[in-house]
Every structure is written in structure tokens, then in C-alpha cells.
Length: 86
Picture 1: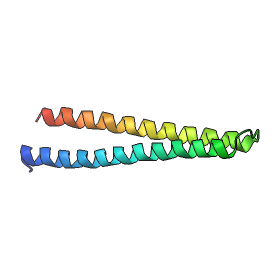
Picture 2: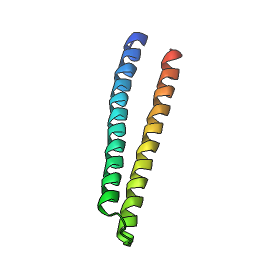
Picture 3: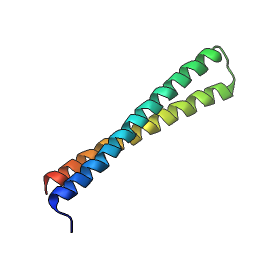
Picture 4: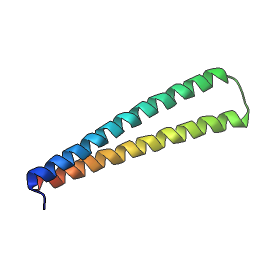
């Protein structure tokens, strides 16, 4: 059985991976924002339904990334609560 110190160290290592994942999510959100701006500029004035659908899909993807990021924040808080109780 692992000691409390070993358990805390393992949790901190996992949380470091979460932090890296959060950074990747933020980078992905920025890229999606840039893509939306580029798409808007390239297709400015188009009334085609596909253009609107593309924008909606990118917005939906961005929202899903935000939801995922928020879930990681909750997980980190829960992990800290657990390690504080050890």
C-alpha cells in the first residue's frame, strides 16, 4: 500500500497532466476562433446554408471544448479536496 506522501505525489503528477490537457484545450479553442474568423472573412456576404452550418459547427465545437475545460477544473478541485483530507 502506498504511503500518503506517495499518493499525494501521484495525484500531483496526474494533475500536471490535467494542466497540460487544459493548455491544449485552450490552444484548440484559440485555433477554432482563428478558423472562424478566417472562414467569416473568406465567405463574407455568403447566404449559403452550408456557410451558416459551418459557423454553427465551429461554435458548437468551441462550446464543447469549454465544457471539457470546465470539467477538468472540477476534477482538479475534487482531487485537491481528496488529497487535503489525507
